[in-house]
Image (tube, rainbow, N blue to C red; front, side):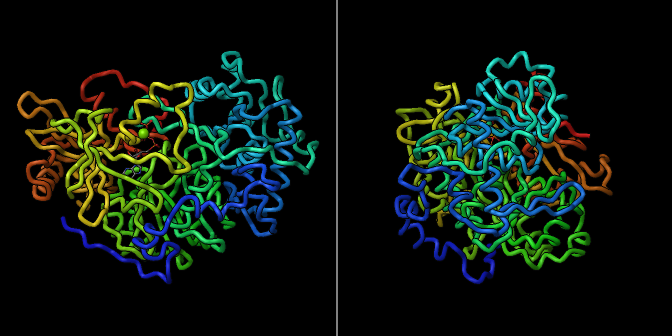
Length: 582
Ligand code: ATP
Ligand code: MG
């Protein structure tokens, strides 16, 4: 199917003209929009996010589960984070020590995060829905000294395993009720002072430890420095069109890099108001939040958008979304169908952008006011130098040092790579130097994703390097097949893998979730096979099976490796981030 490019009519974007913005950009110049710590004592993310603003404007607009609104001002949060930093100092927690959070989207999460950064600690956020084992695994790997959590999460996930965490000196529990071996955060905060001089932190000092989604294997701990804040600022301005007067809602949980870089840091650095919703995903509730909170910029993920689309357009039309100016998506390929649905149903096309835990910030994006190509991730941001590297002749062998060849012609698939040097680049995989080394070759950072670039420099996602299918001499990207299936009205979601085949090498096999009202009949299956065949020709799936729940990571990505392991009857590997569906 051919999708026509979309250009959103906007009253000027932050980026201006793409080519000029790129040509004029240097990170050094951009760095002038940072304040820096007073007295030339360095750079600290929390100072840029809070203290520098000195205003009573709302920083965090928190919605609790009952949809009650609680506003926290910049000044208020400055004082609260000072208290938290003082509290850490009182406990003898020093610079560089790891402070973990295991919290839902509650105010304490924002306070602990920015307070720990003020103290010069390394903050590592864990997703609150993790089971005990994944939590243990990460705190142990990161050698955490402090954990901030709720009494309930503590009882369920930490207490039974605490003895296995010798590094963990302090556990702080939200509220005023401590239990043996823990400290009540509420009381400790009340006792701590509101004045605090932020620890001198250099741009290269470590600040954040983020675990990857575990889509392709054991999660990696990507370490980021305070310098990353410059990339958060620049990319939010350009790729999310965010401005100081905006109300910004990033739906990702701060337990993942998106929810931290854009759900906490970027909007605050820009002085905007961020919306934080304690509730879980529900299409109706999300429309309600967008409309009742007058959200201007919304940053979300393909799975959520697909689910909202599945609920039908009538629901969407029942809400006033007139405040909304910009919608962006990240985390997984965004099917062109969804981009166009946004334009037709929400009144705004959806801007896909691409990045990873390792990159710390958005690297490739469709920009406000620039042409959106549905199905494309967009073009590299100013300051980002991307390229495609040729893989082995079978299209699969990894790119290795000494054998790097850059692809210059359009339309050719290769491994997406970045020239190191942007501020939010990860500085290490925590305690895994060999894994880190392997991510670089001949002056490139290798992303592990395969893409192609068109003649105008737009990048098109093909698949994870490990997921690309080789079938009867064709290289098949799962995303293309999934998108073709999604264009059928019955399909809500699809996951595509290569199934070993003695003749073709691999057969394209699709797992399909149907929309409500469609039955998983043989007739439906044949209809989809024919539909896909028409759209895709030789690379169409040969097999389609219906599956009401595709396996997802907790950050919302289809776990193709799990579909494949199940297909092959192999062990499932690391499933610590697998979402348990009901
Ligand atoms: P792991 O590295 O542990 O296997 P992960 O790669 O899913 O997990 P993240 O860092 O959360 O962990 O996700 C980054 C990956 O998500 C990218 O490398 C890419 O494969 C995918 N991704 C992100 N944004 C997009 C996008 N806009 N289009 C296509 N894929 C995307
Ligand atoms: Mg990855």
